Amino acid sequence: MNKPIKPAKPAAELPFEKALEELENLVARMEDGGLSLEQSLAAHKRGLELAKQCRERLEAAQQQVRVLEGEVLKPLAAAADGGDRD
Image (cartoon, rainbow, N blue to C red):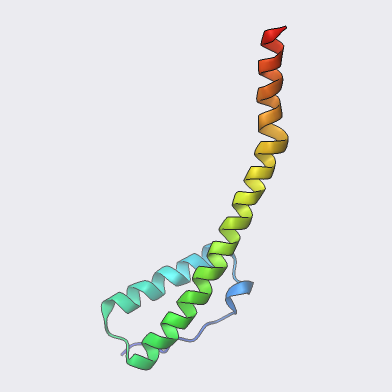
């Protein structure tokens, strides 16, 4: 018998890794085909929340990388290129 889909915490409170793990587990349970209609709907709703949260966290991390590349990596490379020209 399948356990009901009950989120332990709101998706926004989960660390990225835990949200992704829960999402992967939900997908596996849904793919098994053993969920009732109500459980499938609950899993789908929770999956959408988790996917949104993961996407937002990934976008934030990508933005941080862009900032770091813009402020740290690119000026260092530009400084190295500029030093070769003199």
